[in-house]
Length: 201
Figure 1 (cartoon, rainbow, N blue to C red):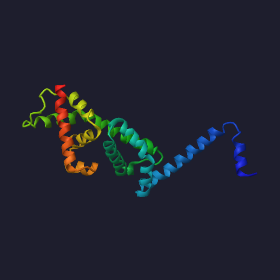
Figure 2: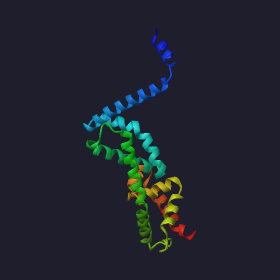
Figure 3: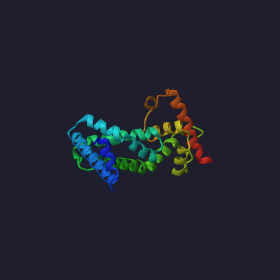
Figure 4: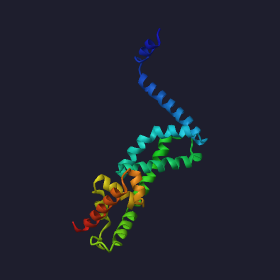
């Protein structure tokens, strides 16, 4: 009897799908355990395989909360860097996906928790521009600033967040986004005007 015929016959048995699902899960876990052991031992090829395997799911997770592709990419770099740095503490028998998602959630929660601090810094930064007729009013609220940033057009919002949240200079932002430095300066100046104007709406 041919192997194809045997497989067709097996498919007629009760619980065939459930058994195959369990077998696949066992095989996947075995492969992941071996991958984890290789990573613990410093195997960079195994780490690259892990990156390719879970990049997409981590990107979806971080984008859900951070809302910007550039910030999500930065988060993923930090997540995998932390994973690699702490690889010696990994339990090969535990879920690598679960471990990575835990790191990701902690990173995102930490970022969101620091939002109010960052926005307070933005307020102080804009208040220092007293030579500008568009300087912010002293009573400008965190909520107004946050809302103004989130309502910016996509490119302008990303530039503003990289400069205000990440503390990047114009040249670094320009290289990261593959824009001219003059474009970054112009878009950032428009962003600041928008933030300052938010109080007057």
